[in-house]
Amino acid sequence: MSDSDLIKLYSGRILELAAEIPHLGRLPAPEASVRKRSPLCGSTVTVDLAMAGGRVTAFAQDVKACALGQAAASVLGGVVIGRSAQELAGARDALRAMLKEEGPVPPAPFDGYEVLLPAREYKNRHASILLALEAAAEAAAAAQAAKSA
Image 1 (tube, rainbow, N blue to C red):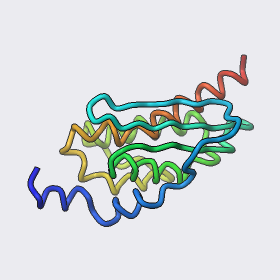
Image 2: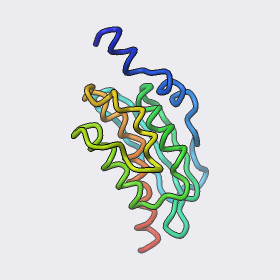
Image 3: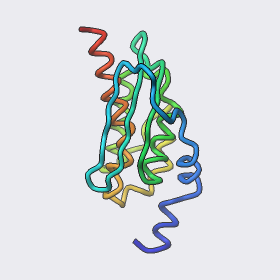
Image 4: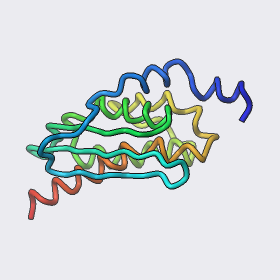
């Protein structure tokens, strides 16, 4: 990766997002917790959440990832409260398609992932970018299933 490629990939907006991740930390009593790790780069994200009425009401994330993974977690943190398990799963699938299949940017309110479009060509970064949303979707599904049981 050349210096100009790195400059393009790590834009000012990505670095701003990485520096200001909403809902950092852990919840004291989550209904569901999911930890995801990227074996390629070692990035990890742990998500804690609680739900009521089928919607996320409390959320926290412990993010140990590269700037791209941090930026993705920041986008998620800005919109996760009030989302359903289905919305999170749909956003995860849309982000994956955006990165891997050159699909469109995920729909609002997840359209902030547009900032990560330059990462499409860096397949070794995709897993880190997907971690937070994958963990949130899995945790929301687990919390929802536990309430249904």
